[in-house]
Image (cartoon, rainbow, N blue to C red; front, side, top):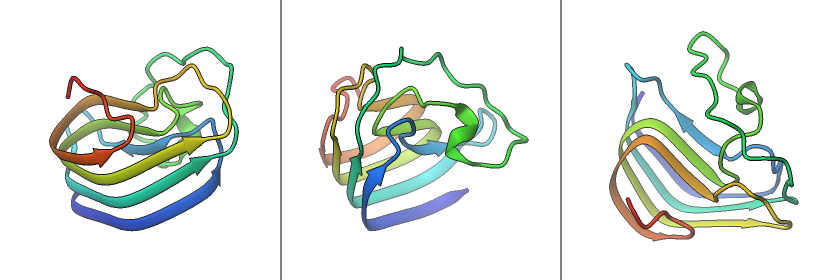
Length: 121
């Protein structure tokens, strides 16, 4: 998949086990993704241990629960190139030991006003 734009998305009451996910495959990354004006509010949090890296599951139907609880609580990108993020807001009602944002084999092109974005990117 390539040349994807998501703009003006607001979601509330999101299941706290699953972050927003962009997951390509090692040999087929998702390319050129633009996320703009995204506001995600998760209900509660979890006290479960941080899960290990989920399997690739190339032949599975793409559904968030297929990975089990995700390794981040707000946004998780794996095998993505050319990611642009502008105005990303994440919130939750409870505590959670997982990081808010996790980038795994993700090449970020540009980030502006993205709450909780990792500094080392």
